[in-house]
Image (cartoon, rainbow, N blue to C red; front, side, top):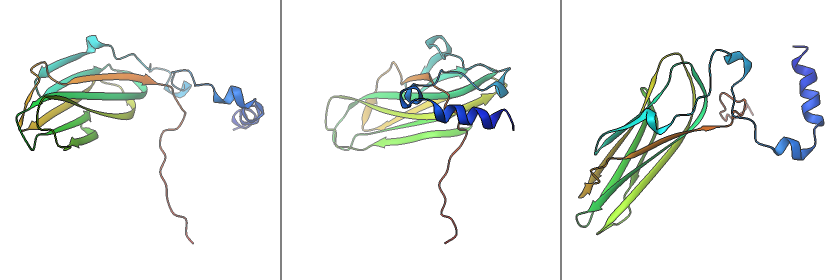
Length: 162
């Protein structure tokens, strides 16, 4: 506790410009055996016109942005698109684009942010579906990029007793 408290005092004494600088994309010392790895295109593949996957390697920790996109060509009125992003068995984001779209191609995009701490490889999957449209046979796009470590594992709001 003694080393943490003086560090807090030093951090609050820094100029505002220094505090506004983005943090380096690294994980805390407590995760010393882990790395915040780049998830390169070589770790991703298209499984079908409805699914793409990326692998987050073992011993990975850090914050990541996951972005998915699916493209379809409308076959008339009432065309809709849906994307779902899963990280392992945990749902990260689900979205539906139901804006009227009577003809032509349209790309629907969805993203989520996740904090990862894994000893084993972790599969990130995007599932793409449409109604009254034809999916691009190239399949959905999926990308994962590192985010700077902000030092917060979780945050939630609550109402204190009044």
